[in-house]
Image (cartoon, rainbow, N blue to C red):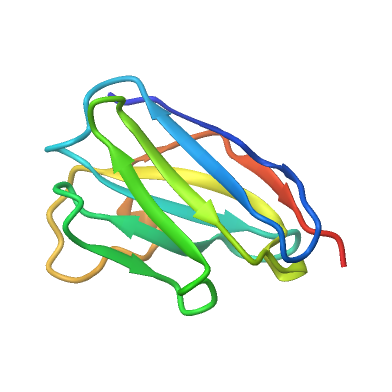
Length: 126
């Protein structure tokens, strides 16, 4: 089974940018839909973005649309989350997730993903 490892988190001032990376232990290009989730203290894990196997489709949570961009480099087995114009409410642990399942709706729930990374902390002070 694939193993995922996030990196790139940190502390950034409001309005700043960060790029998160998720390195997979095997080729994910044709087999996995890749997603990013986040979990703030005291809150449930929430969907942030996903990218299809072919990279032809991306979907975003309303709260990050226009500020975050998900992409993947299948040659490097890596998925990225470029985060711009960060806000204090973006503070959370960010998780990379992968699924091999076929869905006929957009998989935005945690239970729809089988594989998870350990998470990386993003902090945007208010």
